[in-house]
Structures are given as structure tokens and as C-alpha cells.
Length: 229
Image 1 (cartoon, helix red, strand yellow):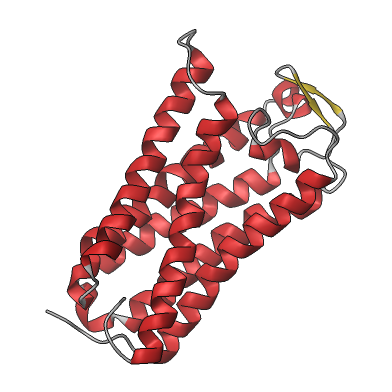
Image 2 (cartoon, rainbow, N blue to C red):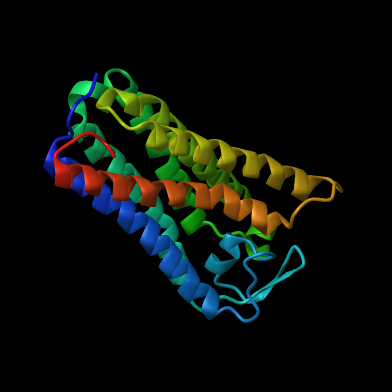
């Protein structure tokens, strides 16, 4: 079955997802530029959101613009779930029972990002016990964010999505989950792998990449008034 998307909600979904991806990448770069000696390969993303100047797990933490990154964390969660809401409206006649599952998974992603943005990965939170909430939030956000891309990939044929889009969505989600597994291996064992921060970024950038790809595809589709590009 091939169903055209409702134009207005599809455009809103594209703007929300595109905005989420752009906001993340731009604000991350701005925050990292103010962090002395910050390394994309060796510093965790969450290091950018820590307001304390300290040492945590052997990494020097000094993020003067931590509030900027925490805003990016929270915005990512809210914008992704907002995009899902409007995308489901745009494809209301084609999503069927899966719409509830996709929305539920996206909501959990938003909750996870809220926890990441509020409870920081810091030495102070390690000592007061709140680090558990940060870790829980990160796990929820990464797992459900990548599950969202996979679920959309598997169900987008109902609105006539082209094979390249379906395949890209599924592959990005799988790669993100694999990177999360590799992050756990790198951080808990002595097995030689890439640096932990590289795996962490892979597990997150898969979601950001999907948002940008989907936003562009939706914009192209609504301009033509046709199925998902």
C-alpha cells in the first residue's frame, strides 16, 4: 500500500527532527570549543554537560557552557518525540497498531534524555548516588532512540517509503545498538577496542543521522506531494 503523507504534519515533523539534529551538532560543537582540551575521541558527550570542574573516571572535566549542552540533551528528547507525534498524524491511515508502540518508545527516549540533561555524569553525582539516574537515562535514550529508527524503517513501507530509506533507517538503528554493546565491552573489560567515547558517539550519532535523513526525505516528499522519498 502506498499512501501520501498529510502535508502540514509531515512538514512539522521534518522541522522538528531536522531541528533536533542541527541543534545537537551545533550546540555540541559550541560547548566542546569552550571545554579546554576536549577530545571527541576520548571525552564522553556527557562530559560537556557537567557543571563542575573536577576529574571523573580519569578525565578532566571543565565545561563552562555545560548549560548549553544540557539544553541540547533535553531538546533532543522533546523534539524527537514531537516529530514522532506529527509523523504519525501525517501517516494516520497507514500506521495501524504500530503507532502506539512507536510513540511509546519515543516517549521513553524523551524521558531518558531529560534524565541525562538533569542528572550529570560527574564525580559529585557518583558520590551522592545520582549517577545511577544519569546512566539509566543514557541507556534508555540510546536504546529507544535507535529502536525508533528501526521501527520506523520496518513500518515505513506502509506509506510507500523507498527501499533506500527503509534500509538506511534499519541499518542506522542496528549500528547504534552495536556501538552501545561495544561501549559496554570497552568500559567493562580489558578487550582492546576503539576508545569508549568513539563507541558512545556511534550509538548517539546514529539517532542524529536518522533525524537529519528523515527530515530531508520528508521535506522532499511534501514538496512533491508524494510518498516518502
